Length: 413
Image (cartoon, rainbow, N blue to C red; front, side, top):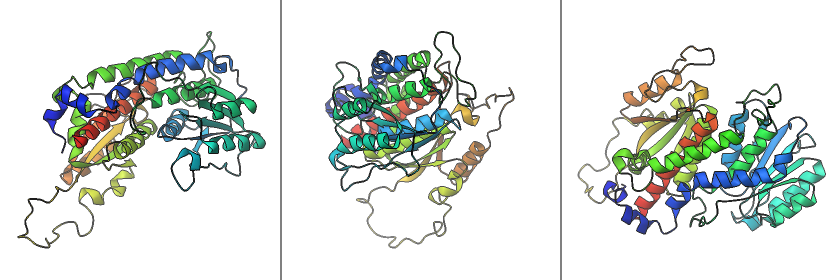
């Protein structure tokens, strides 16, 4: 279990954080600003698309790729289909991975490739294969890397991977924070293509027919996103004590439990999936995700409702339990976004599109089930304070990123 006194000692945290994990996640806002500036100075700033792609195919290395695909899908809604291409190969090393296009991929589709290194041969081969199929090509990679070169050679759009200057590389591949340097150009690209409301520039509105939030990743929304991440870094920093620090509080709650990250709404689902991957890959702490209302049955047995869970006989009542590790009891954390009719910060129902309060629905059933089983239950939601849906989900992601870092440092200590 994570020691709260350790988390409230900034000097001890600094000594334990030899890989610079806290610095990496705290620099998320700086990564967003630098990446946005680099994207606007690239050909993306002069892009004039003609219609939307049929399908957006997302491929790449690192934990940023599934998060980018989930965020694009959540923000786009039913405007466009987003598909993540999963790698195959004998090892997770970049040189051993390969990606394959679906049989149906063709001239109506867009391939987006992400890589912080740009050296994986499989990604370059994927770009070549997509070019032969007639797909549109976009890559986010360091300038001069093999991936950037092959994209330019095949007349694709190359966006620079531009992390914040003077930001030291974190000592773990699953370290959160630098992911925003890859995510930001992709979000700006989606906005420019009209996937979730075209970029509001020079007084022009977005292309008609879009069902996603308009201006979800325009320049104003991205600036608000960076400010939101800076605010979270201030509230969740190492100098803030656990009692007033939502990330440290989550780390303490997660340390002796099995987190069940339930989500209501597509943006909350993206945050939950990323948080589970970060908790497992960075802190070595298992976590499970599920969407409401399916979570009520998918995780029902974990809450104590499975057959044979009640009244199970102890194999040896008199055995010595001093050296036995404490079992991990489940703890439900419900992530909610505004698109799911989430309540406000005080728990009240939020006004829906028509102005009427939307019912809690599955969230109320989730609370009742957890309380009936005696399982700890909490909710995490970020109010839309003008930063739009992207800012709200970024706050959820950043809080859970900080929690995973504190959990990792506490376990190491």
